[in-house]
Amino acid sequence: MKKDYTVTIIAGILLIFLGIFFQVSDLARGMIPLIFMNAGTILIVIAVISHNRYGAGITQDERTRALGARALSNSWLLTFVLVNVLFWIDYTKVLTLSASHILGILLFTMTLSAGIIQSILKKRGIINED
Image (cartoon, rainbow, N blue to C red; front, top):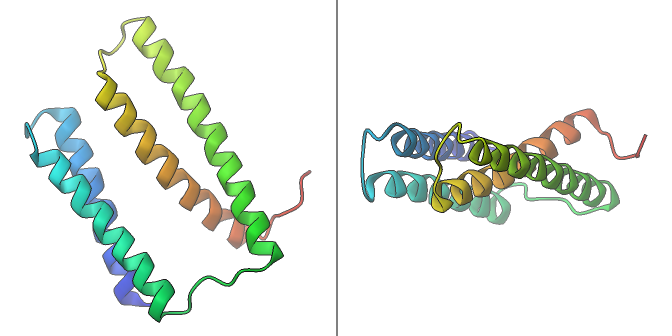
């Protein structure tokens, strides 16, 4: 991946985490955290689309499809565990989370974990079920 795209993706991730931090810590109220999270998401999407269109792109073969499928299934499992953890946090009244907080946490967990797990599996080259 070219350096321009990497810097843009890192900036997008930082904006998303900054927006989440503002939302959780109540340093900013209203639309400010959402603006940061949306701006970060837009930066990441634009960088990935530009890289795929003008850069090396994604090579589709059996190995990359298997890695993608395994990454998505692991991401789904991680999100399922997170749903259970959030349920018990709410049930035991450890934290009071609104539906929008929970949906935001789940959305970003699903998105980021799929990408991170896929990159880890690509580095390892693991595709066979053990």
